Image 1 (cartoon, rainbow, N blue to C red):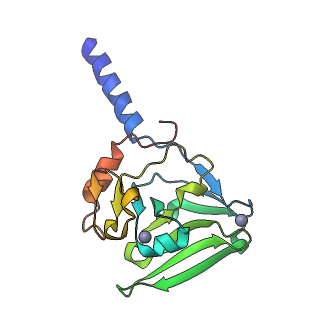
Image 2 (cartoon, helix red, strand yellow):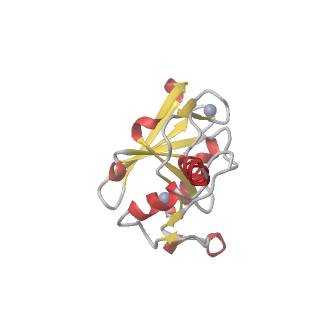
Length: 175
Ligand SMILES: [Zn+2]
Ligand SMILES: [Zn+2]
């Protein structure tokens, strides 16, 4: 009996760790574009690259990496504006904003074609958000550098360990 209770408690803990409340709704500042995240993110990050500094007009961007089909525009698709740029690697990345209010909503990058990078500041609830990894620290503003388990001067080679750590991190809405 005690064993059964222990196993049940362990299972509950596992579900709480893995469970990510879905869907997570979000949208732009003016409300014309609305979306839903319908699949759990694989990890979260901060990017200190100079493109992200320009795009955010700030020190770094935040990103929530979601399987490409798990980010669905539910309203205002016609108000979306796409800005594309080919990076030094020769791969294109596309930044999507609201044409009316300029909120930066998400990114699609050919270097990560299976994923959409949602900008978590646009989630209706983003108080739970924190990055588990940071990239392009070489161009970070010194005060903006974080003490994170996963930290890279440029990009990472293998997202495997980051994904694994995120799955049990407890970085979740409502956590
Ligand atoms: Zn808008
Ligand atoms: Zn960046």
